[in-house]
Amino acid sequence: MIRIGLGTDIHRLVENRKFIIGGVEIPFEKGEDGHSDGDVLLHAITDAVLGAAGLGDIGSYFPPEDDKWKNADSAELLRTVMKDVRSCGWEINNIDCVIKLEKPKFLSYRQKVIDSVANILQIDSDKVFVKAKTGEKLPPVGTSEAVEAEVVCLLTQAAEESDQLRFL
Image (cartoon, rainbow, N blue to C red; front, top):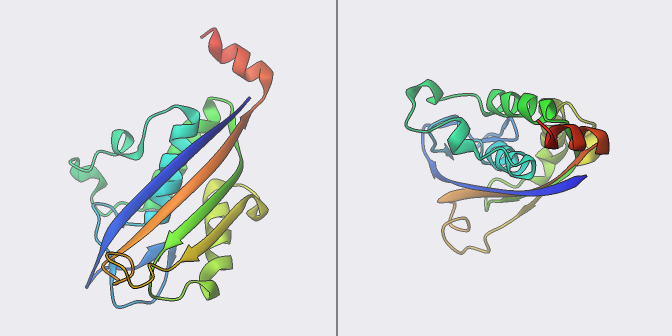
């Protein structure tokens, strides 16, 4: 069995916050404003994986109104989700990611981010691809007011596990 999930996230960029993409801190004068560490890529991946597995979304797992998740490490949140996804018999076949940002330029960080995401997900790095697009100077991404991510995830599940879960 295969299932596809789509995840998106956007965060305002503000001063005095770290700029984190895929678990990698990237030097920049602004960072993501969010309840957790604001890592838009990991948030979008989390939603894509949860959606593909039919397990909800990041907000239902980690409600922003719960102070327990204030400044949480998004990598740890994704690891928690992956335990549940794997316990249902799902494995990641691949994920394809788009980061939308005007600055900083992303290309020199791409492989580090791919390796970080693969490490967090405990999958081979050739199952992860990340590319960046600018906002062509159009707000909010193109004016460096926000950073956005979109992710597509393909999950696979062995047929016998799918049949077993159906009867639970």
